[in-house]
Length: 480
Image (cartoon, rainbow, N blue to C red; front, side, top):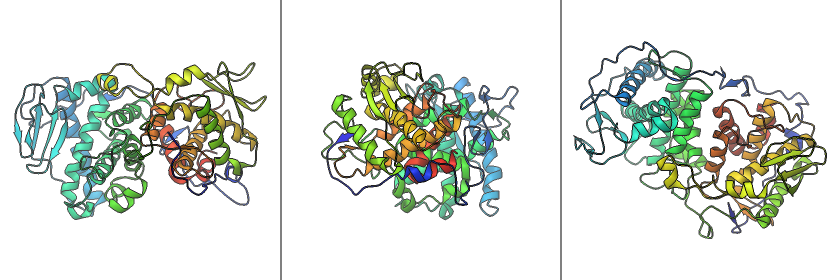
């Protein structure tokens, strides 16, 4: 987060209205999200990946080595093509699907094969090339790195995304893509198309793969987080692919609503919600502020202002052990219902707030923290639990954790447009730091008062996103 800068009009979070039980004839919308389902599907736990006894793909892959990553990639292409053979005519007026013309596997450490888009020499990537209607992947560095870091479904994620570009090419005007379309819009569509495919897999329609809606989808979201753009990138950059927040939004839109939603993404509606932007000129820390006593005071002031519409006393912050004497213990921060305080471990949160070590992240090593906003969001989540208690909402149920993440998202939106004397302001990359916390097993942003978190990372990320984009009014309606 940054401190100081331009001021904006107040965006109040009228929590007293939206956090209580529904009244005055208000009813939650049907099929609302919650801790017991993932976009209407049950929460499932099993090992995700290739099915035992999956058929051998009948595909010719140039330069293939036959190793594990080639097997995963080839099966992914076969499976995605099976999906689009069904989905394209069903969703787009009977349009017939045509498979891609060629597939290429290469080792970026030594191969020099050419495509219509250029040589693959030292190209650690996977890509769709419209010039020869081909899909190519690096089996030497990229795929094994993804598989080892995030599991086999991360390999499928990358190929499903690249195949999304092939679908854009096939849909033509129906996808609204032209030479002038910004790259980030094309990437949003491709992420969204991948989400539609994984919904089909999650519904157990695939002959090749199975994916659980808990750990399996977590693998996918973790891979999308990993391949996010660097904080400070502009959405107008020719190579912009999107922040983790933007990319997971698009994936979840496809998973929840299907390919027509994806084809409807265009420069106008995408630009309205993109979070990718350069650092502000006066953001001297490039998105990272020191987590110290002054910043904690600034955070408290921001939360008090954001939630003043609740009409309840917000919790006081108290440095200490990060647990409540005789009460909830969710270190490094805990909400203590007995005296309406949030106690926190200053040193532990300082460590969490350290900037991300991107070199270590790329190499798969532990190092650095998650960034300042992860620490601020954990404290904000405990504050939000206190506000919920103040208005009489449950704070110990699974849905209370999702409601908390949603309210943290709503506070983040307020921080994007701070008001009055509030000094903290959302910086480029901050929302990605919150997602990093949501995807780890012990993050607090989506935890209830007892530290219990919903099983599905998909649900946790969605809750934050809904709060940020839809406001606090959605939080109690969706997570009653």
